[in-house]
Amino acid sequence: MAAPKASLPTSAVEYEQFRSYLLRYAGLQIRDRAAAEDLVQETLLAALEGNFSGRSSVKTWLTGILKHKIVDHLRRQNREQPLLENDDADRSEADIVDALFAADGHWRDGPAHWPKPDQALENRQFWEVFERCATLMPARMARVFAMREVLELSTDEICKELGITATNCWVMLHRARLVLRECLETRWFGKS
Amino acid sequence: MRFFPKCREVSELLSQAQDRPLTLREKFAVHVHLPLCDACRNFRAQLDVLRAAVRRYLSEDSSR
Image 1 (tube, rainbow over the protein chains, first blue to last red):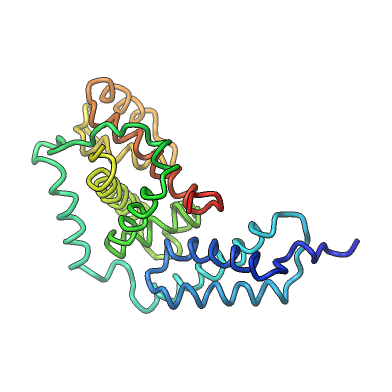
Image 2 (image 1 turned 90 degrees about the vertical axis):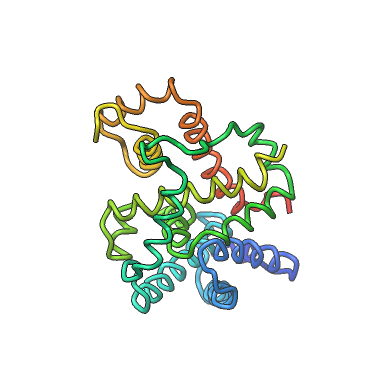
């Protein structure tokens, strides 16, 4: 059976839909908008040349190609600017988290109850806040967070890619989640 | 880890529970702490919201 080429994006509208989805995927992990657009462009080109087997959805297939490109990109980035060689960034990230807890280890101003989070996910304005908060995260923790939550790499894989220990990785993920949480609470959930 | 960890350590464990299975000892520590602590219970629920939000953000049908 011939591969169902017909399911590849054929119309301009369909192409735009895939493109905007892939950009959203790349955008969460790559701050540099131009670099993210390049990777998406490369993905769509590779898709045209590649052979879609029809065993998965086109979206899953394209995301798979993009995922590899993002991992390569992050690998290059990490070579140029290793994650752990930035003591200043580490100190300022640690300060952010230290400020959330009292010296005795209790929350200073603990996480509040978030009313109806399901409804938030249906709200257009929530997503603007979410994007805002994601881009406000300090770059290093955002990178690790995206590798874990967007690329869905395991901690082991992240450690290997970035040349950090599992403990480093957990520390950074913990920080990232605290910071993202704090931002969403301040800008969204705390307001209702 | 202390036998009765404070919120800061519990929040670390709750975060790590999203990335690896906790040991029995760690599970116990969390289990003992959570009923006594609204803030940590809220944090645990929010970790799931964060994960769901990322998934949803990436899915086509997020409302934009």
